[in-house]
Length: 138
Length: 407
Image (cartoon, rainbow over all chains, first blue to last red):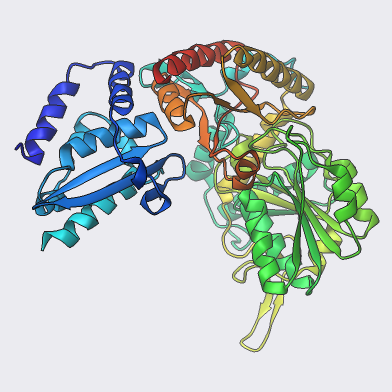
């Protein structure tokens, strides 16, 4: 199993081929379109993070000593960013999730989607995942 | 006499229009949120701080007198532009929101339980929430004029909601989310027939059309400097002298007093009664410059140009498969709200940004409008007089590309 840092590095390398914004977003949109991210039974109001602009649903469960995340969004670009976050954070140990810096987001140029003012629900989603990880880390 | 309207020469007045965003020439279509600033306003900011920065109304020294004069000259200029009878009817505020809060608090103090305030279904949150707070404080009732699906107010309903219980009507001149130009002159006349006062939210109108408070006969008018080519953090409340004199002060502090002892304080006269503390001196002077700049523009030409942009963009957008417009009133300002089937506004806004185009996405601080249409938000392109048809073409091409990527 790869570590969070190893997966982040993988993603950074994948994104290095894109020098044009539109190509980069084409790829993110593909990620958003491709992944069935959450079971329909979890797409409920209590799993909903209501951003000002896009909505995010997130579901977390513990499978043996790892945490497994699934999520979805009504906006495809948000969903594409979620796909990357899940690739990095899901199936990892709680203590690693809780301390993950997720610096790859900035390195691949997507930090604007994680700014608190962007109001797409992603910042709240990460906070929620980390809180869940902290409460399961003991 | 203003020069004949020429968009290319106007664009030269706005240095930011030469900027690039994400490597593309900036196309700025978020004028409903804030406008760009002409060089004369930028120069005035610099000149104030570089050559005559001082606190006003108090100092006997030279700089204070120069600054005070410039500040009060700006007030007079704004009063003249808006057609106010007296310059002391122009109260300096932080912006439209602050102006409305001032009225809600201060005029609100004169209200009692059971009094009614009327707003409309298309108000910005800043013309809803202060009234809700007032209603909670004083036991007043908030009534809402409904609108139809085109985004036009239901004037028959308005006539039935108006009554002798109505103390104030607060309506937007132009809807920021839909672009609707409301028939406020007629609405003011009707409000006055039942003895109610009328506040015009002019945040979206002064930059698009001539606005004259005497001609409208409104009792209050609120506007923001930054939306009409002036600085942020400064705005205006116009109020009729008689009303402002009846109203208690909003905030206490320096400048708003005549005499202070620990036992009792007497208040200063208008406009100072409502301007506690050191105001945004540079902001007011530069807002004066912005009004002066607006005065130099051929207003008829400006209106014609913006209407052409509106019609051109609407026709071009219509060609996009699956487009739905929100706000199709007969009288509309240069604001277009829309959604494109199979795409989310957040995604479209993000991709347009990468192509250098600034539009607004979301609920535009008008959640009740979005609830009315049962949508989470829209994409909004709002034009100013410095925008061009060529820029509209750039947006259309970018939208087509974005839609192809997203569907």
